[in-house]
Image (cartoon, rainbow, N blue to C red; front, side, top):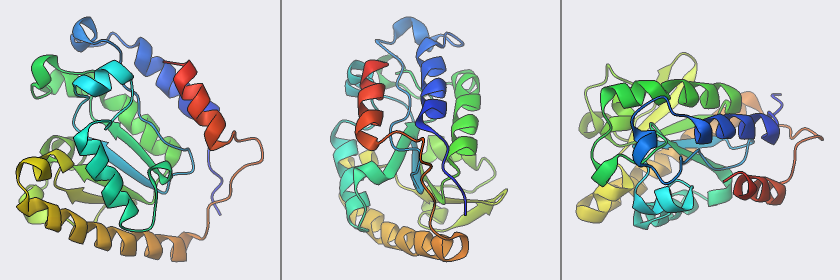
Length: 216
């Protein structure tokens, strides 16, 4: 059985993200927005970029799209504390514009490091920008949403971005249906891997919350 990494290892990545000045976005940000969630998370969600509220609070998916993401997670018997959430870029693009390719590239190693550290059973790809970053060869969300895609021994599931469902109500039902598939993928992964063991030296979720807030 795999042993989860320590929160300290994850917070070390978070610290480097907060100090990063590798692209132009650091000039206009209020603060960088690392991911958020426990190191034992079996499921990881990757979105596009922080918005205005995320830029102010320093956490990903804290607006209306985040509320819908929470509902989606709860619909399969989990809570927001069971998922690690992040974005392809960690600083808000001015005016919420699309991230530029060089900005995504400058941030890409942070995402790769986080995935390698957490080793989630399932990675949710939220929207086309995250899809272009993680599965650039794919045909698009419309064709692949809800399907399991295996690359390099990792399971990815492309989904419509929750923000898209806020503007197009017809996508809401599709999102919830796709999440039911995700529940099955998680169950299959646990049957193969077995339960993940929490190391005795790892800090609690409450301590993780406090450390994350302190590091802002």
